[in-house]
Amino acid sequence: MALQVYNTLRRDKEPFEPLAPPRVGMYVCGPTVYGHSHMGHAKSYLSFDVIVRWLRYTGYEVTYVQNITDVGHLTDDADAGEDKIIAESRRRGLHPMAIAELFTNSYLDDMDALGLLRPDIQPRATGHIPEQIALCQELLAKGHAYEVNGSVYFDVKSFEGYGKLSGRRIEDVESGARVAVLDEKRDPRDFALWKAAEPEHIMQWPSPWGAGYPGWHLECSAMSAKYLGNTFDIHGGGLENQFPHHECEIAQSEGAHEQPFVRYWLHNHMITVNGEKMGKSKGNFVLIKDIVNPDWPTHPMLGRKYDPLVLRFYVLSSHYRSDLDFTAEGLEAAENGLRRLHTAVGLVRRALERAADDGADHGLDLAGFRSRFAEAMDDDFGAPGALAVLFDLCRASNDLLNSGTRLSRAALDEIHAVFNDLGGTVLGLVPAQLPQTGGDLEDGLMQLLIAMRRTARAEKNFALADQIRLQLTELGVVLEDTRDGTSWRRA
RNA sequence: GGUGGCGUAGCCAAGUGGUAAGGCAGAGGCCUGCAAAGCCUCCAUUCACCAGUUCAAAUCUGGUCGCCACCUCCA
Image (cartoon, rainbow, N blue to C red; front, side, top):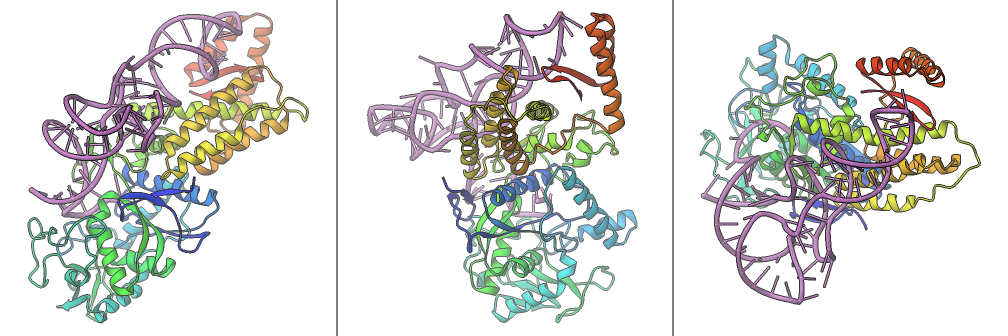
């Protein structure tokens, strides 16, 4: 079955047919860097990470662009309020660019920890002011925008497609109910492309309309066009950005370029925490560092830190297009599930270490596992179903390795390759180095203790053998006796 | 109020017309000096509820109830 993707534009799954295969242009709305990344970011970027990985695994040459927003989004609404980065810079007494730098680095650290592939291009909004001004001019020239008092607004009524992504008819988008209407706008639904800056506004740039700064939505239209062209294949982002952000992007891009903007719109659904919406205003968001960074204070809800891959497993255990409730229990279950996967892979790797060229074949239908996995992923990137296939393979593989059959190196290599390809390359859950083992010294000491225990057991000195094992357990180290010898891991 | 989505076992979660994947938790067994890990067996006659279409529905249609998201900063 060929890849099917759910396209928000059509509200249905459809076959994925890129503009110029095998090339795929993909743009995902990146973070506004004014705070540390939270679970919402984890879900979104993890989802698109696996989407990119699957596209590449199946042969597409993906150019993955993800912006870094370091200016322009306001605390309030499109027309009033303060730039969030400037607000944070005031709180911390740092220059806005220092804030952007600080949280860009924080973001990248978190994403690296979770094993995300870096996007091919990560353009900054402040690095693309000329492109944004040019787009603004284009829209003015085409009659889609107008200038008032040094600000430029998009004329929503001039673009008939406005509302096609979010399913809103333009008449329904009644602004003014909650947003104070600015007198200078012709229509309350019009949105800012360029805002005139007060003299004291720190982040401002010269423009044909005077000193100012770009509006909310402009950067994504300008930067996606620069790096992916006026029409490209995939645009991803969080569901909450569907309206108004993505709707406005479409208006800007199609208004300026007069050709379709994006072929497939993909939206990931949201994170809740203990059943409640996670939001800035609720103050209940859980940071990625809360969960995985050992140098960060422990979150009271969690009590301890987790391997970053546990978080990855947790997110991938639900579909990107369904809501995910974040709970301590869920994280615990994810940790156990991930361990099961890692145990199975570890078993194969240990067997591989002492495998010989001769030996039995595995007798498994590995092609069958691969094709079932592909079927799940090809159905709108169904990671949960793909994971289930991997667990079936775990059972089959464990069973085989515990059965006493001596498998040939080639047979073990083949099993290992499936775990590596599907669990590692595609899902990013199987690292080259399994997390159970420590450094060289640690492992050396463990081998010493394991050898001493082996001697004790050989001499039937079970009291000593148990003492070693029990005291290690208290230290958080678990010993496992297998037919290939004793291994250890952190509890 | 407008728009969109969801409701599957104790929990998480696949499945979108052909007779309920997988994970966690739980029970029993095997293995083990004892464990741990692993393996085997069991764990939803049933998919919020009510009608309807069909040989056949968790899957389609209509209705009811409940939950959520967006419309306002958020991934």
